[in-house]
Amino acid sequence: MEKIVERKVFYRCSRCRTKYADKAKALQCEQRVLEAKVFTVGSRVKNIEPRFCITGQKQYFFSGRVTKIVGPELPDYEYEVKWLEGKKERLGAHVFMYEVKFRCPCCKEIKEVRYYAPELKSVCRR
Image (cartoon, rainbow, N blue to C red):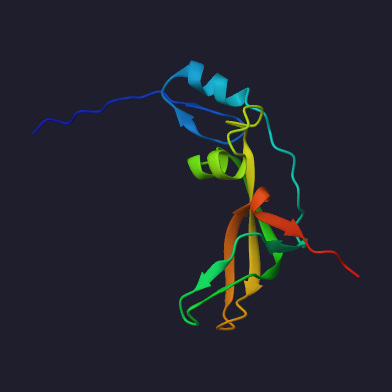
């Protein structure tokens, strides 16, 4: 049996930590716009689109708190097409995801889910 060892060089974007085999693509990624943080840890937020509770078999809206900010990272296809509606000035920007902790109003379970900023809105304190 023969042992074969291959050495590969990768380049990493300093913002989102994505690895690229090509240096030009890594530099192109680094030049992307960085989205401003909309919420902070502890912010109270609501979701815009209804979620579905499998246990309660109902759709619901929640109110919760941001527990963690993840990113920056590259957005997925749904984020750019659905939430940004293909606006060219923000396509391909580095974005943040917000981990939100809330209690399901249907089954009363505590859940933690990640959302992009356009999927959430701030809850006013009175």
